[in-house]
Image (cartoon, rainbow, N blue to C red; front, side):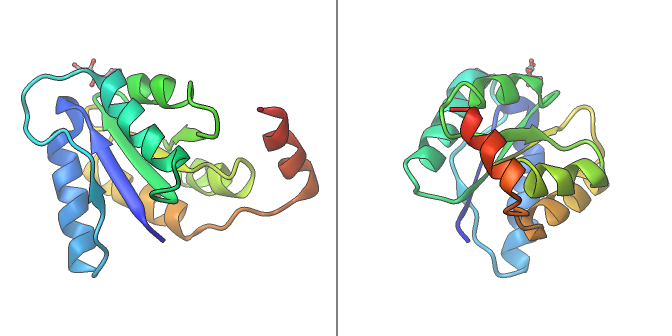
Length: 142
Ligand code: RB5
């Protein structure tokens, strides 16, 4: 599974930690920026990652900003993107099981590193349920 990651300045440090952690596990994440802590605009970051997923260059994305809200709003404007702000373990699983979410979102200023790593592991290891009602509802998103 190819995974891409992007963050604004608010999430830059956390992005680096996630990339390093997964590298140690032998998993190379595609880093779509931002590449330093200088201030930047979260819509542009989210758009870049969303395009990457929609173009099928990666199956899953990770987006981070200060609160997780800005990148969620921006990413979910893209047809085919289902970005979920993961704020507990149950939601991390449900986002995959029920929503077939393809982007995991985190708030670097609102969540601890431990929480983020735990929810990300759950998200990445949980399959979509393939339930008929869930398939129908996702199709209804357009
Ligand atoms: C940047 O200061 C901050 O506004 C951004 O990271 C994000 O939280 C927006 O929703």
